[in-house]
Image (cartoon, rainbow, N blue to C red):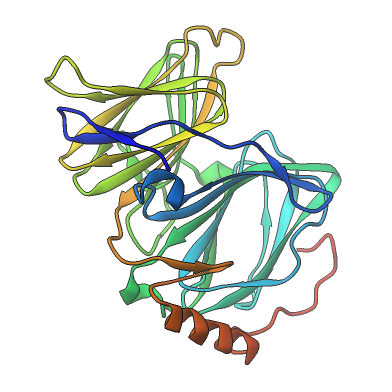
Length: 305
């Protein structure tokens, strides 16, 4: 469990958390971060997996009580087919974001497609507050061409969800959230406003990154993130987090992901793909799933849609 430091600006920084990739089956490696790694300061995220997938890995499986979000980074080769029990067939291309609002229960499968497929992306479990956990399920896709981009010298920020710097993603989400896929050249920086009561999860997916809480105080603390590490930052008062690429990253710069949203201050009980508030609720959605109440996925053929 990480410790945290409260800065004079009212931002609480966790220490950097590093996780090594591990194999899931024979075609996938995952670097996994869980909410328990960050003293609950990862909320509304429950889990974040950085995956590299080259072949079929996850068969049909359920979700409930949360949203399962897939981001395919632009470096992806091939594409991902998605099929679900609300009968939406989606083709997820490099740079796309796919949002599965599981709510009261959904079944889906997502598989790599294409010659020499190598899917590089994130799978996120985004919690739902208790009042939304029985929402009707739905799935949505935002394509790369529709993602707003902030471009400045040395900075490229793709606003996949939410609003930043006057750019707003067209993706509707059940609760406010900001998801940014960013790139910074060596020693370049970007500022991320953080409203009071929000948490920011920051992941240095390729290259070394630092994060600093901006404010009037001269002794604000920062966290250094080596490549593959993540940290969580909580705002007890509204503040701004500056992210900066290491000056040594002279070749390709730094690629990072920033995800921010209002903290959900409710109990979390997770059992596999289910995220609820109590064991009794876990038992109920498990019963619902086995009783077929999550629906079924229509037959499909590899290569569709």
